[in-house]
Amino acid sequence: MINDNMLASIIFVPAESYKSALLSVGLCGSSPPLALKFSHGWESSTSMLWHGDCQERALVLAWDYKTAAAGCDLLCREINLGPMNCYTYDDAILLGRRAEFKGVGTLILLDTPSAESLTTDRRTGAMSR
Image (tube, rainbow, N blue to C red; front, side):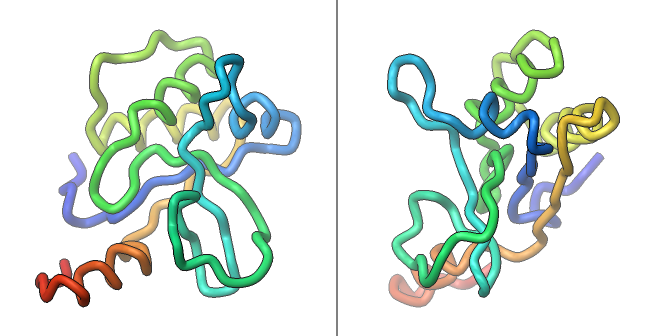
């Protein structure tokens, strides 16, 4: 079992042939939870701290200590698994490893919180994790 406080974020970088299925806007216009890689590291697609051009995109399975059910559901469907009602960090990691094994892409585990959450922590005076 993974301690939720050990990993800040879990993302999945799809192989070229799976990018359209996992990273594109859905039929109803909904966007999957995405992380984008910049020169300073990975950031959420909702981050206000983007600087420069995005080098790579990834599907978010968990971000800043919270699982992303929509990202996990998309990956489940892509590897022919039924979506779950809720996901833990362990579920997200196992799902990513299974997709990796099937050649769908690469799982990336990030042990530091995003720059956006650290900035928010500094602004609010909260203790960083």
